[in-house]
Length: 172
Image (cartoon, rainbow, N blue to C red; front, side, top):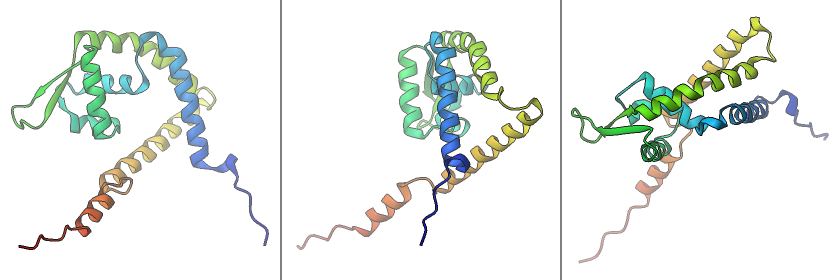
């Protein structure tokens, strides 16, 4: 029986990874002077649009997982880009705000990010760019929905395994 070759040229996963790597390289080249990583820029942009948002709201807005976002916020606070405090409504939740330094960093990176994003779209005909962005949005929304459903997380599996491995009760 003849085996079929995997066609990388028609693999959505492979092509998305290559496109993402190129986008990251363009971003690094254009925005490196700002000192912000792509994810830091994303967090600053999200916080600037949702000043006082909880970290949970920022997870939803950015697609960055909860623990990574919490670590990023802590490091960005150390750089005086963000500030956070406990919310009055829920003392377990943090309200995140952009600082003056964070606003300046975001503003200084904006034109470079716009330039990088323009270069990303450049290979596409102008008439196709809107459809491309709609398609990317649909994929991102599907990823968000799957994440919320737990489909992309090992947490439900690990939780289920812990429940089945109940410790035997000690004899008295």
